[in-house]
Amino acid sequence: MRVRWAPIAVATLWTGAVFIALAVSPLYTHCRKMGIVLHAWVNELNGHDSEKRAFMIAACDSAGYVVQAWFNIVFFPQVEQPRILEGKIASACMNFLIAAWL
Image (cartoon, one colour):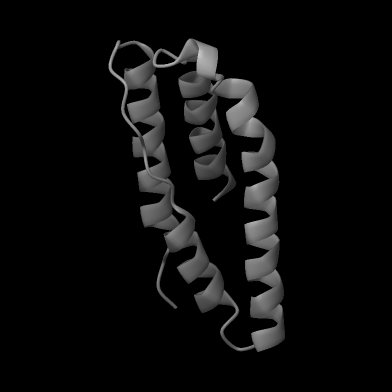
């Protein structure tokens, strides 16, 4: 089995650093998420059991949608665009938490 956690950890740490850089600069850009790589990892880890794999993918999707339902509303309010300092800080923290979890 390949080691998938290492590139995910590097990417989330890098993305967290980008959010910190965005928080201290006036620029406004979008950052991508690691959902596709995480799905590939879950598929590889649970390739031996299709029911478990389906459940894990559904659980990952559900957890992601639950976070997205409130995270963007709370931390990226339209009235603060394009600065959104709190959103950039919260996104950096979330990326570092994901890297620590891995």
